[in-house]
Length: 371
Image (tube, rainbow, N blue to C red):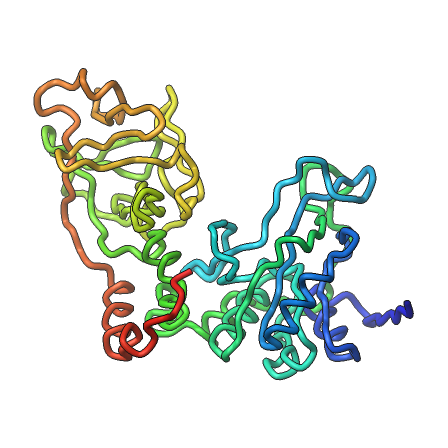
């Protein structure tokens, strides 16, 4: 095939290079790949089928791991494709049973040339890397398009690791820009730091509400016996109930796979972190697995007030003013009973709930998928 190379006078970043290539493309379909990728044989077939079925569709391949020694897909590679937009205007990886994608990761996506031009391509004021994936994803969903994944289209991708071969070897010379800030200014609504577009959040309500990204309640976790409250500081530290601060506030998070709704874990309010592994040093925090698949993040709050660690089946309690766990049957009377204190409905959820009611989304869009 004929290959045409376009080169900027100076290095101005990934998205600017993509924009230049996208504008110059002559084919019906444009594929944006990073240079450190190795597509498998036949990678294009399902992607082209999907775009032919809906020209307003962006398609993400199955993104696998690249073996640098052979520059091909690693054996027993993990597969990624799906991301979601966080309320601090970033993105996180996740997976579920739906082939629709809220947010692309950025590096690998394919779309029709006409749809690329109709939606404006990439933001010309963004430089470097990051943010363009969020902007383009919101642009697609809110302008009548959609994003899907093609499971049989496999493209191996090199991730930045400690291997020196994966290190960046260029320097962006263009003036830096606050790319994520531009996304928030362009697309976020009231209380920009907290509220993504309502219709987008409602379209993926199983992710945002069911996955606990958008808290329906925020609260303190208070030990009923001592009156002390848990805090995010340390690995299970406590504080006086009179102390205030966002690090003392929690919410429920992650889908409960037994019901398909929220929640199966404990999440720090206005954070992307959830309770995870609980070992001898205490409880660890880790990025929330909103799909509910991470067994380490299973914490069930029972009607009796117990918080039960899923994999262990043990109950949390305070010992010497620090969080500990033991067999629920060994709890003494009044021990290990927790209650929600200072419960509020967060502003972001109230705005979302009121807007969904005001625009009558549920009545007017009864068949709208939820993930």
